[in-house]
Length: 245
Image (cartoon, rainbow, N blue to C red):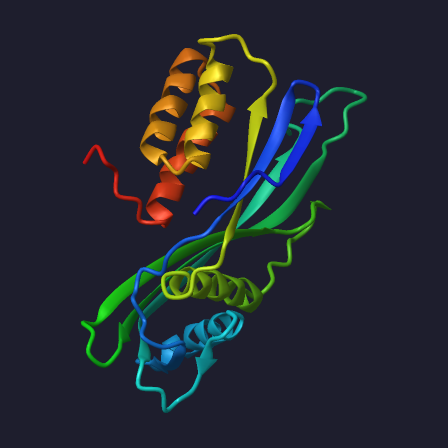
């Protein structure tokens, strides 16, 4: 369900439009009372994050004796570390040159979780969600970089995975914000982009993706490619079934 545009910001010839979308649950839960069970010891942090996400939804009750049960069947996460280095090239030496170097740490986190929902009289259904997030430190001049432990990053990833999982059962409205152009020339890439946003707002992602790709073909650039990738990601996230398939 699409709601009227609620915000409009103007900056020269560029506007930002915003609207709210509501989604139907992908699982026909007969009740908002649910129990959450971690099937592995390692999945307890994700199970707790799922409980917290459920409790944040209006009207949902989490109770260990509920007949509707949500099993956290799988959980994985991975955090990699790296050090970014910037500096002048040490091979260049001049009488007045000074060698400069600075460093910072970078953590990249990835997590995935899977749940199975079981309710009396209904077939079990499984859902999965994935999250990625980067954490960077401040630049320091030379020296060793202190790379922090990753519990905070892992906890944030668990929260995002849990939100993605629970969105299948008790979806929250989503605010969508897009940039459009004021008074573009007909047939130009900017007009195609505006038409793509209008199609997305109308709920026709097939047409939005077609127009966004046409806009990129007419004027290739990082902004137009970002919108194509954003639409592809959104279609995947909401499990959009393309009419062209």
